[in-house]
Picture 1 (cartoon, rainbow, N blue to C red):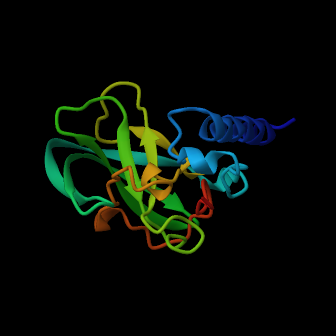
Picture 2 (tube, rainbow, N blue to C red; picture 1 turned 180 degrees about the vertical axis):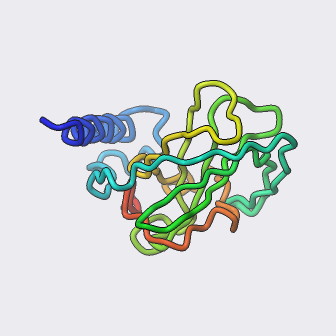
Picture 3 (cartoon, rainbow, N blue to C red; picture 1 turned 90 degrees about the vertical axis):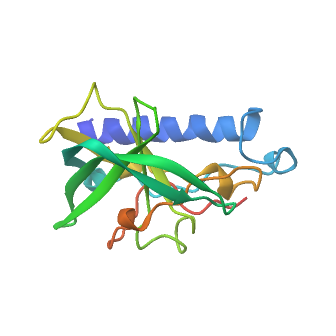
Length: 182
């Protein structure tokens, strides 16, 4: 078995566990009356080409960004890093955010050319969990196979930040979760 096969098997196992949680757990974003008929999320096939390495530009004085939400409010995040990477032979940039006062994981919401067609119209999310503080020139992995649909796609009870225009990719990313059928 190759490393790629092992990765795909681990990804499928992770997806099966997420489907179980969504179908059975109280914390599921799927409304209780729809869980019985829920038979799993729809995913693009695992694809190693959508696991890339990004070069970091750290923002010493993070700029505040007001993100619109799915229910018309705005939430404030800080743009703490820019992530430059190549995908399908082209260079792209996504920004990583944290809420004011937050630390740890980076929030990376994005849209691409699948948005509103094969994927949720409000965009998708990724979280990156770097080891420690990031500095200019550091490299971090970005795995679009882990891109997921925000909870507001499943229920109006959730309010989700929408990816700001600076995180709209001008390419197709057929990886991660597809539009939910709930």
